[in-house]
Image 1 (cartoon, rainbow, N blue to C red):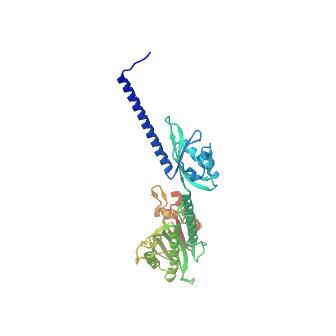
Image 2 (cartoon, rainbow, N blue to C red):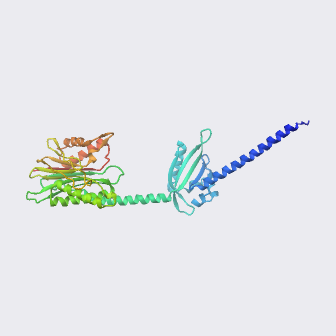
Image 3 (spheres, helix red, strand yellow):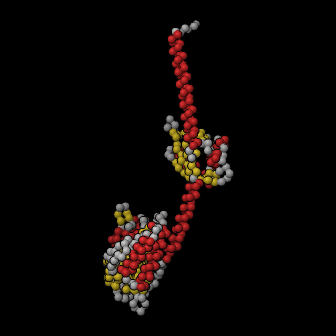
Length: 415
């Protein structure tokens, strides 16, 4: 049976078929151009882009520059499990564990690991993996962006080595900053010192302390005690701390007057800072100096931006000696003033940096009063060494850990 269509209907059908054909051709051309642009984008970026079928481990997409990057041709990459074998053996288990964890948790994953080049060399890469979900919400594709991390890793390792060297040099410089001595090292005096670095990865700091005598042993000698805290960390802080400690010695032997020692220290540091082009060396420092005359029963002290010196009697009474003075290194020709108080036999003199007072529990600081409360509780410990240890332990228990270096110095005149 033959069906005859009217001519206008046939023309309409032909026009629609022609339009559909043209549109299909245009869509195909658009798709081809889009695919070409995508390929250009994938192969033009300075990274390797890939897509991996999670179920089979097959590579679905891989940038052309992979061959120039790692030396293997594309056919090799199409071998099942080949990409796993390229991961350096020492990193393989950890790298794959990260991949599997990213898939399980459906999260973006970044990880650095080593891979083996076709020529046998080992290079570092950084991989960013994204899990792509299918329409049903399941995970089907792992999309990765890989960049060469060798140069960055080499620079990182060089930086780590440089920091290690600086830390080693700094630690060598710090050794004389905190001399060790026996509790009965000085006539008619018991002394104890405690230094503890902050329990962080921060660089070593610039805290220092010292005890020495001036005069002779015929009855005119006096004992000089000092603690200092240089602003900053690392080599510059340690170098400045060493200079300041040496200057305290020199100035004290010329004139054992705390205020004069601080005045000269301040002028020295201000002059040095004015001549120094390296801003790291233009540092500030807090210093407390005490001259203790056990024979006369007096204590003379001056302070430059430090916690007040305290005298704790055998009965537990604490006396804060307020001697305010500006921090070393701010402005030349500052005037520092001495404070003179009685220091009888059995009194304990306490000097500390702010590492103790800044022990923190949440928003609450231990503070100077908190340190005094702890110190008075342990003033009758069997030895000053035991007393210093108890003070530091309780301060640490209050804050959990120290955020700054702790420096504590105790002295007590004996008969």
